[in-house]
Amino acid sequence: MFEDGPALAAGAAAMIASFIRREVTKARAADGRLVSVAMAGGSTPVATYRLLATMDIPWSGVCAWVGDERYVPPDHEDSNGAMIGRLLLDRTEARFLQVPWAENRPAPEAAALYEADLLASMAGDAGGPSPDLILAGMGGDGHTLSLFPGDEALDITDRWYAATEVAAGQPWRLTATYPLAHRAAAVCVLVSGESKAPALAEVLRPTGDSPLPAHRLMEGAAPVTWLVDRAAAAGLDLP
Image (tube, rainbow, N blue to C red; front, side, top):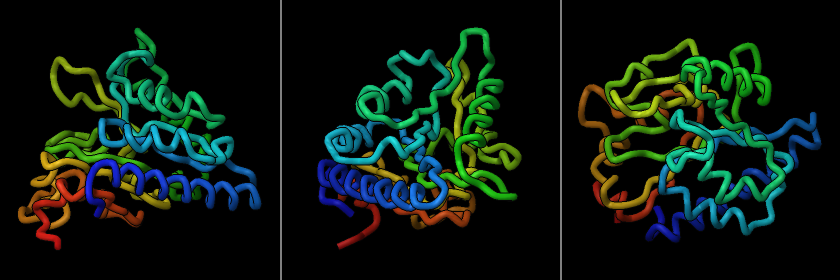
């Protein structure tokens, strides 16, 4: 737990930078593959990305992608990819896989194309692809990535990346699914602010029979690290 938002951003940036340096060094000494890193959208990682942009990181050894995305034009103000590129990746040598948006391309087709890009870009085995690091956030309703309470995407087991219509009249979302998240070498969830406290408490200490989507990240083999500030942890009765 971090004392506040700035401390969370600094701690997260240090952890991400250390992970990338270590894994790129290992990959270059082995088969030279690019380290696969899913970048999170939303407001919480913004400060972390700004810090990462100032750090000495071997981005040329990274293939970055978006853990989830609104299906909007790539320069749209609501695009996670546009935000991540503007704050961080556009000024690095990382390979950045953007969702293949096209005006006449349905979201499910774009998700299938993006899934193919991911499969071609990351290591894997007979069981499927294996991302190195997935960065994610959590909403006040307990959603993570674009996996929302009650949505059909929660039950997808035969896709690594999928399209989902979260709300009528809103842009479709494209998202990594649980099967992909559960195969990551590491998952890190950044949570900040008192508005997230009730959901975080329910995610980490469930009281009901239907766990919130973010809790289900922990139902697979991937180790999940929760990076939270004191305000978000207010419901956990920590010292």
